[in-house]
Length: 378
Image (cartoon, rainbow, N blue to C red; front, side, top):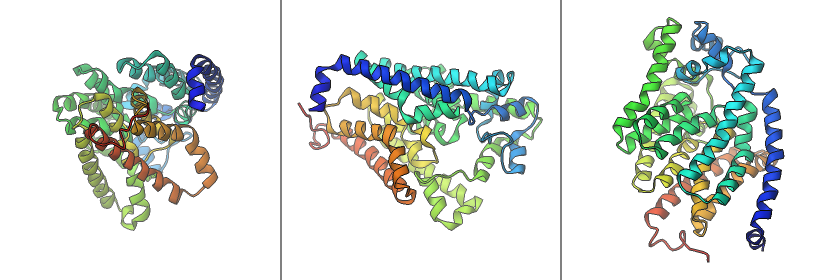
């Protein structure tokens, strides 16, 4: 009944959503103007003053300013040079402006590149600017939208320059790594080398400006991340660290990292056996949510599978994708707060995500034979 009513009143429903979304977006921006604590401004300031913030924070055990612990790649602090020319209050507003550009650019670029209708494009744009992961990114001044944008480029533009720019996504290890791993899994070795250029350039500039030992400095971002012990309870790396006592040892953490990369690599090979670029991008982006620690703002990476599913909403598997993503975007935080039992709730969600990825791969591979998951509803 509800779906039929919406179909008969598409324009009115869309206008209503636009009005609600505008008020929601204004509220989000107002919060971002006074927060932005995750924007890595202070580590960048230290770097451009010639201070190796990795060494400083490793020794101190934490950052100096708000929650800016600087556990990102060298390149991010190089790129943030323009923001270091301003005081904190001004810099965070400027970064909020950059994030606002990305929050509109990402859905528009995806929808236009993969030819979604104007109605669906507007609807998806409204979802993206009002969903909790996006709002949290703007509020906290996170880098998730920045990373996601550059992760998208090699799937949309098949050019050397887009491959180079995709290397900017590696500033955030827990998500951007999948771009590099996917280049290897898809045997795009030239793109892998091109994408590595920004990372090595950032490292070269960093150890030169701070007069650091190049070899030691190369591993310092990872050392800082591991020392911080950043774990959650909705990914494989975190769960292993929580429930296995030896995981506190550095050698065990490195072994876990190696095994997870191997499992992720195998999954990416499976994903890349499909020919649909849009489909591949959608599933590749989910991999970081399965394997490595992430907060709620990283769930923006579920947006491509939502867009892909909007293309063929008559298929049951795509309906499941849509309901699942919308649940994460709008209800996950509320339900999680009400239940307040992460030790059970988060692993169940993780298992569901893994099951969803496997089901999508199997469904696409057998789309002419698998009746249940490709059942059409006319």
